[in-house]
Amino acid sequence: MDGIGGGGSVAGRAAWALQRAMLASPGGAAQLEGAAPGGFEETLKRMLGEVSELQTESQDAISAFVRGEPVELHQVMAAVEEAGIALELLIEIRNRLTEAYRTVIQMQN
Image (tube, rainbow, N blue to C red; front, side, top):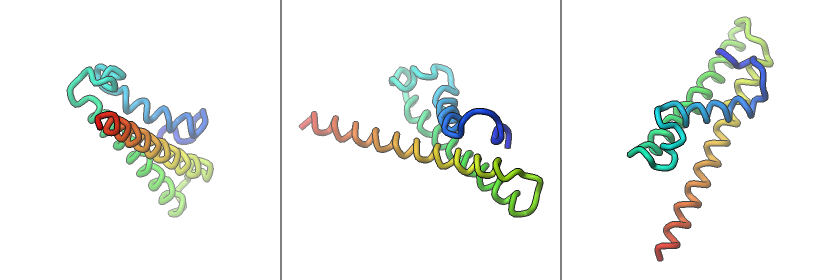
C-alpha cells in the first residue's frame, strides 16, 4: 500500500492516479484527441483498471485493519476515501461522455 499515508490531499492523489492512467502510454494526451487508433478506448480501460486497483487497495487496508495488523486508521480511511473519489471522478467522466455522445447524435438529426 505505497503512498496511502503519503502527503497530498486524497482528492489530489485520486486525480493523480487517473492522470497517470491516461498518460501512461506513449503518446499520452495525444491519444485522448484520437491521434492513435483505439487510444481513447485504451485510456478508458486503463482508467478503469486504476480505479479498480484503488478499490482493491482500500479493501485490503480494511481487511488488514480488521485482522489487527499494524495499519494506522488514518491510512485505512485515506485509502477508502481515495478509492471513493476516484470512482466518483470516473462516474462524472462517464456522465460527460454520455452527454457529449447525445449532443453529437442530436446534431446529426
